[in-house]
Image 1 (cartoon, rainbow, N blue to C red):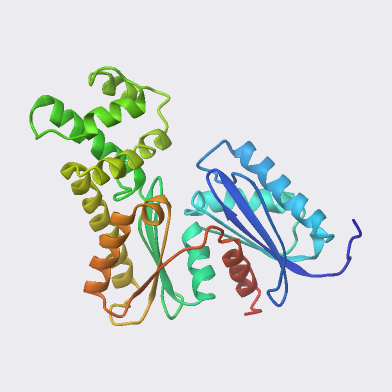
Image 2 (cartoon, rainbow, N blue to C red):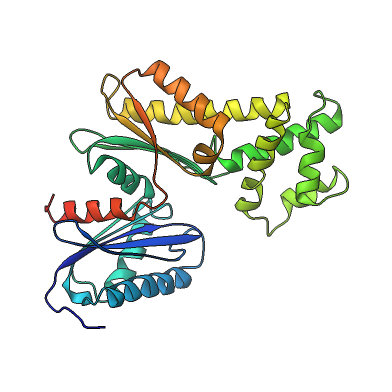
Length: 314
C-alpha cells in the first residue's frame, strides 16, 4: 500500500482482556481506520504477550492506513490493566520502543468510555465485568477512582462477586443453613461436579482463574428467571453495590446537583437486565438530574478524543 509521508494523525486503543480495538484519526478527529486485535491488558497476560499484541495491533493498523509511524502525533491506550502508575510506565515504554515519537497517554478504560460517550466532557463511568470500578471526571478536570481493588478485597457487584456469592449460597443451602435454592444443582451442572463437596476443589485449586468464577454470574441470572429468590437477592445486592460505587464517584467530583451522564459498561450492567434496572432505579432516585447510558462496545474512538485533547486539538 502507498504510504502518505507527512500525514499527521493520532491513535486510540481500547485495550481489553480478550480483544483490543484501535482507531486512527486525522488531527480533526475524522476516523481513518478501525481494526481489532488480541488482548493488550497487562493484568490479563504476560508482559511479553502484551508487547507482541501492541506491536502487531499498531503496526498492522498504521500499515493498512498507509501511514508512517513517525507521523503519529499522539496515542492514547485505555485499558483495565493500566489503572496505576507502574503499569502505565511499562506500557509507555513498550509504545516508545515501537518508534512512536508523539505524545503518549496511558490511562484506564473508564476514562476512554467517558470520552466516547460525552465527547470528552465530564461524566461518570461504572464498569462491572469480571471486576468492578467507578471513575469520575469533573467540570474542572478533577478525577476520582472508586473501587477496582481486585477480587479478594473488592470488585463488589462484579460478575466475580455474583458468582462467588452464588457458590456460598449453594453451600449454605446444602448445609441446611438456608432454604433451598436452584443455584445448588444449577451451579453443579455448570461446573461439572457430582457432589457439593467438589465445590471446594473447584474454588481452591491453584490454577483457578477469576473468569471461571465470573462466568457463573450467568447461572445466577438463569436461576432468577426461574423464580429463585436467592438468585434475585444476589443480583439486587450487586446492583446496590454498583450504585454505591457510582454514588461515591458523583460525590467525589461534587456533581450531586449536576445534570451529569453516568455511562455503564461491562457484562453485568450491559447483559443483566435486573441488575441494570435496579441500578438505574437507585441512582435516579438519589440523583434525579443524572442520565444513564450504556457504553458502546468499542471505546477506541474515546481514546482518540483523549489523544487529541492531550495535544490540545480539542
